[in-house]
Image (cartoon, rainbow, N blue to C red; front, side):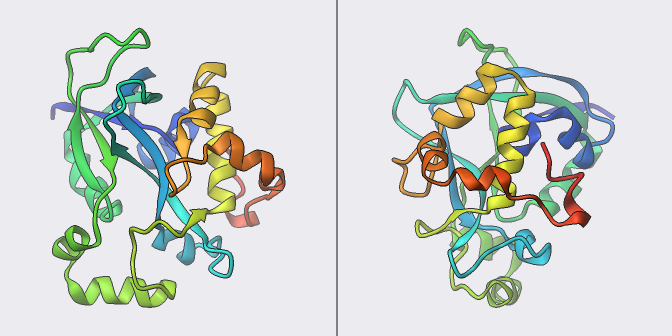
Length: 216
């Protein structure tokens, strides 16, 4: 079976974390994506299922990437290969995203000449079309919200800590890239700025059942 390339930009910046999802991944390495920005701008149903979402403070968001017009915007990612046969399960596990083939670059900005799959910001309309109105209604009802993609959410604290630790494990350049090129849903506040105001997030340990998986 052929191999396909996958882009990781949050928890998948850690090879250890990536292997929870893709145990047989190959050739884990650094790359770069241009004209995209990382944003915490959607409700993650999984966080409600795992008991780590905080609906009272709207700290319920996971991470995606979205295209942007700024030629200076971009960030360091992980790049690795998986067996193509794993794609259907990957799509099913991450249904709220649009899965887009992009052209990653090396760290100097030169195109690598390959296509890689990345989880990109979607819309509620697209999500509904993919899973059906009844399933969409079930998910939003279980989360206690009416929309998935939105601009009034904040990062899930346990997940943000997980992503910060994952980026640190990938090197200083990846860590700085995550802090300075990842934004809240307002598209203005960087994670570096957000953590200055909410430094206790980094002390927020996951539940014992998730301690190993959500620690970078």
